[in-house]
Length: 605
Image 1 (cartoon, one colour):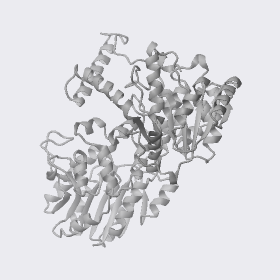
Image 2 (image 1 turned 30 degrees about the vertical axis):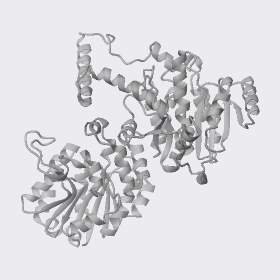
Image 3 (image 1 turned 180 degrees about the vertical axis):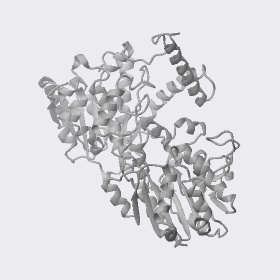
Image 4 (image 1 turned 90 degrees about the vertical axis):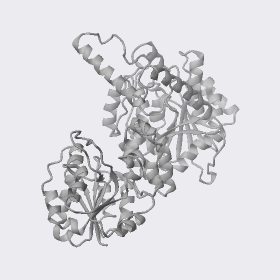
C-alpha cells in the first residue's frame, strides 16, 4: 500500500528532539513520502535533522493549531499528488512511539480492507460533550493519528469537510470542530472507520490517558506525552503509575533518554518528577556500578567551617573509586587547618581561597571553580559544603545536615548506586535530595521571595523551562551531583562576586538564593532531566511525617485530594474577594510564610 504521512510538529523554540526523529525513522518503512509540517520556525540543527528523515519539511505560521496545519498541508500537496497514494496519515508529535515498531499496527490495519479510515486510539461516546455540555459527544478517533484511504480522501466529502472548516483559534476549537467531529461526520456519509485499540476494551472513555499501562501491555505502540506533563492530580485520581509506565516502555525497547530529554525542557519540573516517579530510594548495597566504565569524578567542597573537614571527607570517601578534590575556603588560616587535616589523611587536594565570600558556596563553585567545571576533565561533579545551621536547634540542624549528606553519600554501596544512575541515563543531568521540610516551611512555599528575581534571571540566561508554581524542583541547601555540561547556563553566566549579597544583605530575593533554585532549571533547559535521591532510612522518616501531615490537613477537608484542592482554591478566591471588598484585611491570616522569624531562620547558614 502506497502511503503519504503528514506529520505535524510544533516546538515554540524550534528545536527538534530525538523522540520526533525516532517516530519518523520507524514510520519510513511503511510510508513512501514523509511530509513534515512545522508550526514554528525551525533552528538550523532542527531543520537539518528533519531533512535527514523526511522528504518534505515545510514551515508555516502557528495558526489553526493541528487542524490548520493538516488542512494547509493537504492543500500544499494538492489533490492530484494525493491521488497517487492509497492512504494518507495525519499524525502529530504529541505521542512517544513506536515502543517497538509500527509493523504489527500496519499489518493489522492493512488486513482491514473494508475500512475507509482508521486510528490507533479513540475517545468513547459520552452523554455530554467535553466542551459543549448541551449535546452528546460521539465516539471518535483521536487526532494524533488518523489514516484515510483513497475512497475517502479523493471524495467530494473530503473536499467539503476541509473547505468548510472554520478558523481554529484554540484547543477547544480543534476538538469541537475537528477531533470530535471527523469520525461521526464521515460515518454519517457512509464511510467505515476502525480503531486499533477500542475504548470499550478498557472500561473508560479515554484509555490513552486513563489506562496507558494496560494499553502498552496490549501492544499499543504509542504513549501520549500528556501522560507525563498533565497535572499529577489527574493521574493520582486515576491511580496511574507513571514510573511503571516508563518501565514497560523501556522493556518494549523505547529509547527512554529521548523521552526524558524532551520532557525535561518542556514540562513543569515538579509535575514531571511526580508523574514519572523520579524519586530514587536507593539501597546501601551496590546494585552494579560499572567500574569498567568508571566516571571521572571531581568533588568541589566549600569549607567555611574547617572543623568539619574530616566529616566531609569521610562522606566523600564513599565514592566508589578515586576522585579529585577541590576545596574552597575564605581565609589563609582556614586553608592551613584544612591542609593539615587532609595531610593527616594522606589526601591531596587543590585548596583555593576565594576572592570573596559574597555568594558563599554558590559563588565559590561557579566563579572560583569555573575552570574546573569548564575543563572537560570530568564526567561528574559532586558539590557539597560545610553546612552547620548554627542558628537552629540541635535536632533540626542535625537532621537537615543528614538529609543533605546522607541522601547523596551515605555509604559506599549507596553512593555507587547514585553514580550508577548517571551510567544508566545519558540524559540525567543532576541528582539531589528532595526538598527538606521537617521543621521548615518549605512545602508549598519554597520560592519564598525569590521567584520574581528567578524569572528575570532565567530570561537573561535563556532558561525557558516552565516554572513550578510554589515549590521548585531544586537542590535545596545546594548539595547535588551533576554533569558539568548540564550546568553550562550558570557556569557561563558571567557572574562576579560583587553580583552576590554581602552578609548584611544575605536574604531571599538576592542572587545566592535565586541561583540555588535555578541550577536545576538550567540543567532541564539543556535537555538533562533531574532526579531526587534518598536512602531508605531517611525516606521512612520523611514519608511518615508527610503522611501524618496529610492526614491532619485532609481531616479538615473533603475526602478526595482533587476535591480538597478545589475547596482550598475556592476559599482563597472568597478571601481575595473579601479583601477587595474591605470585609477582611490582607493581614488577617492565611498568609504564606515569608519575611518572618521562621523564614529568616531558613535563610541563614
